[in-house]
Amino acid sequence: MSGLPKNDPNVLPQSVMKTMATYRCKPSSDISNLKMKEKFDKLSATCSRETTRLYSTSFSLGIFFFSKELRDHIHAIYGFVRLADEIVDSFHDYPKSILLAEFSADCFKAIERGISTNPVINSFQEVVNQFNIDHDLIRQFLKSMEMDLDEQSYTHDKYNEYIMGSAQVVGLMCLHVFTNGDQKEFDRLKVPAMKLGSAFQKVNFLRDLQADYQQLNRSYFPDINLSSFSDENKRTIEQEIINEFDEALSGIRELPASCRKGVYLAYVYYRQLLLKITRIPANQVMSERIRVSNGQKFWLMFDSLVRYKLNVM
Image (tube, rainbow, N blue to C red):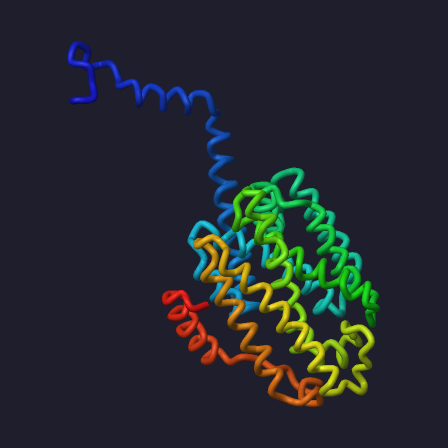
């Protein structure tokens, strides 16, 4: 009874009156709709999280070591870019160009409306709107996906354009989340984030060289004839990636604590994959897909966490 005025037992406390007034201002249908949207947003986040888990063990483990409030945001970005990538790389028996055009249109409609019935796009638009992600970054990414529909081999200019759109802008989308609206921090870490995205993508190119060339008839690396891919060609590409990883590491060390550990772990995984590739000849890279086993990944995770704890990144 301590919350009720002693002189009138029938009067409710002010806090309760305010709460009731709030609900009176909102029709019950509005409250119900809000709850349904929250349920759908949770479903959307789950879809993006499961997309990440199914398609990338490395990124899933890296994201696990982000602070809890960041995880769904990065899953949303990964889910979006993965779905677009699957359209151009996997849906061979379907009209890829139409599917990608519809996917792109749905994305920008969702950003404008604040909702999409596609759960992966829905979770992505929430991140775009919450963190004010530059729409030009999204356009550049989707343009690079369009290039995969047509380009079979790349000039230096097209190669740089593709790397920017398919990888570097994804790093910048994530950096918008990591810096949470701090433009000064974003600008300071922008170049290392782009270098990391570029290095990741070029490692992917080397890892997938056989599939891209033999199954999809693609050749990303300019001035290199994959029908006669040599150890010298391979070493040139590897050194380029090593240089980018070195530049990226300086930026990883400066990232906010909320994401630094997870990004460092993804960096370690990819650096290990590159190391495995450097140890085999060019003809083997052209004949098989090189990977880091799950057992190695868990060992790398343990080793990386120790290094991180001791501040010897």
